[in-house]
View 1: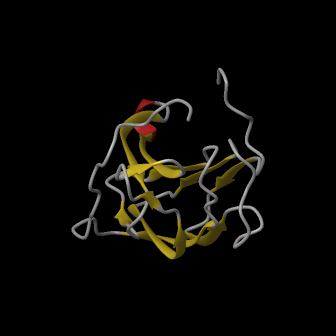
View 2: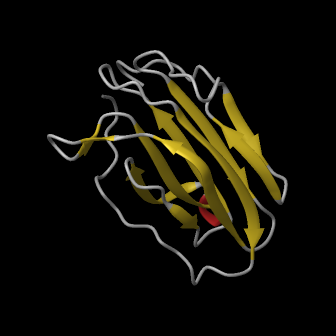
Length: 142
């Protein structure tokens, strides 16, 4: 990515039906312009992602995300083609995907020192609790 750091957490592919993810060294802040990436793929059903800790604040003066968690629905039928992208900060989201593959990216900007998050995911057969509320379309860099 032009102007963006490589993932300091590495790229993590998770294929079990349940598990945990966490930003590097949570609850300590990451350096400016850090990036962490996870891809979750389950064999059947959908993915429920519950954030157990979420310290990614919104900038009060502008109501915008500086640091952000980006969630991308992936369609496995089209070779992981992006299906939808949502950006989160501030409020703790509950996410139930409408696909069996999900990408989660955490990015830090320059000024705000977010601690990041911890989360649990589980494969589920239901997606009626889906609570994806788009805030801003993904930016390529901060």
